[in-house]
Amino acid sequence: MPTLVVSPLRDLLVTPLHSRELADGIPGARLAALDCGHAIAAEEPAAWAALIRDFLTSGEEAPGRVRG
Image (tube, rainbow, N blue to C red):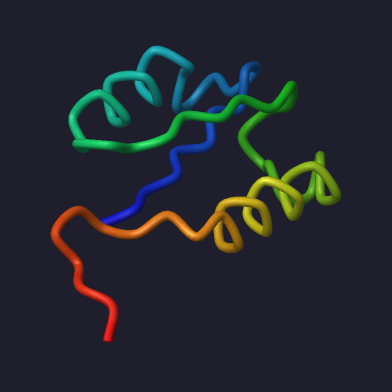
């Protein structure tokens, strides 16, 4: 399953290390970082939306998935 993990670099609750560990534990996951705190969508709405949009329109498919 395509997965995007977004790491807020100044988050004191979910640190970048936690985000990296999460991404490392999901085969094929992508890790992206934003320079903000825990409230990603409120602090960096345009950058967050761009990450999500780019991920959803990348055309990446889950391994083994057959188009049809």
